Length: 331
Image (tube, rainbow, N blue to C red; front, side, top):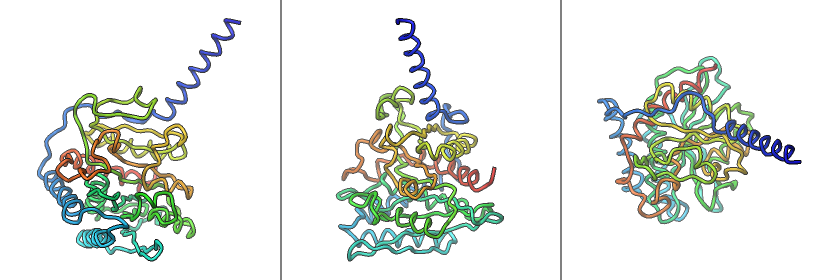
């Protein structure tokens, strides 16, 4: 009896260990060295990122259904920045009762596989009472500059950059969520979206022990220093997560972690626009600084531009250019 019980316990540990390895094992090596100072190009990019965050979170401020004027102002700013970068934006309007909202999209057409699409997206709205510097002016800033940086590249696949409205409550996971409207329309058109990357809260990096938390049991496997960027997906998007983080790690000298977990095991992994694409059967992931698992001012009036870490945000954006290239190029 004891021998059988021992075998069963060992088998259980082997199974659990194998499963955890499956969801957290990522290709490449997470960078663990010193962070080099930004060069002239990096410094210019940092200034651009900070300027976007300042405009959205300070000059425009809170952006949501209760302040539709500022929400429209943010969308207009995003559209103008895309135009300035050389794009011709497309507006996707959608309605919430008597209000009208919009997604703003630009695209780099694919050269040989134009029907295969990679989407990078970020939401520009905020929760009520929050200027939303990290959540999610940082994501929009990254989206705008990422599009600008790869504007003149030629890829096999089509690459889209989309600014979404209405990610936050009360619209999350409803038909009035901008990204869900977008994903549903894409599915109805039969579009072949091979992957969607949601850029969600990417401006906070804390280089001290004890600054990073996790939902259990993930704290057993990841660092307690909140100075990395995280690639987060579900099991169905595991290949996308692995390919994305592999491209990042191959080129970016910045720490990164990844996970592709069942939504039931880690329910926090749904918390951004990638969730809308899962609902329509598309692979998708979130790139994030992990928000409230690191940042105590999340969803508060104190989420202001002065709290963000722009040098590290710059390093992340430069690394993401290689993710664009990796995903837009067939293996």
